[in-house]
Image 1 (tube, one colour):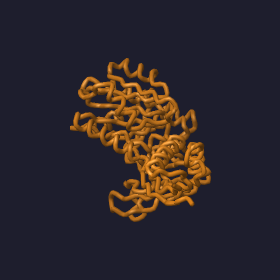
Image 2: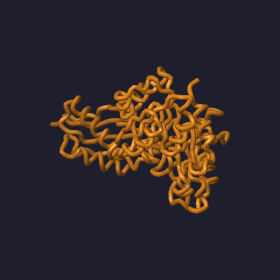
Image 3: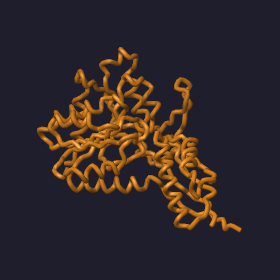
Image 4: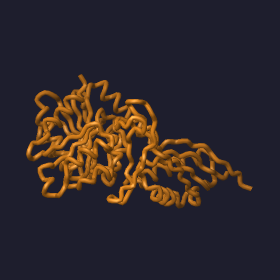
Length: 124
Length: 218
């Protein structure tokens, strides 16, 4: 998994922004992560904190807002939520990308792949 | 007293990859190169399927391969033995290729005279799906020996691929897997086309090569 490289990129961006803002401290980081990135959010949070150690952001609280997945249908243009079905045999959830209106599989993911740094809270 | 403020950042961390991928895509379009991003697990048969396609197509087209691997030398040597241009990319501990790796490989080798570029991604069904490389088509290869629930375990990469190849179907019976289920699961996940193949026995390879021909820029 690439949680570590994602976390490293996030931290680089946070520190660059902190420097632009002449921040003495970064106390909060708000991230928006799509559920279809298949990232493990706890791992991302852990590694962001780990990489922030020894920097102006070392005490920052990491807040992650999960974004649900959506697909847009190429046939009927409807936008559907990505349904998540629990599969007891696989012991985890399987996303279904089918169009809720016409049942087509010919859809594309229009939401749920976000990896965005929304805001940082700083002290000057 | 400290002055506390919330600063809007609104930075998508994938934007840099998207920008480079789009530059790669422009370069490929300008030079008439059709690019295939070949993804799949370790040992699924990516190298073997590319080698077969090279043999079928090399008399009609000029072909190059970017061989992405933890240590790229081994696959590079295999591709080079078919007389095509090879661009090895050793990724070290990075578990996927990104657009920058591809851009970097292109800086070192002139591919302007190439018609078809195969990019063999690092063996992994998770990370490569997030990274656009600037390709025309994405192919995901799985083998029956990965277990016939492998597709449903990694739905996103199948959703984002133009072709699923279910490989090694000749041994399905011996590993207790249903190739038919895997093909059906790929379609359920939203991949538009899925084919069963056996690199060793030759099954499905014509359709694999047909897919490449159909994707080529005219």
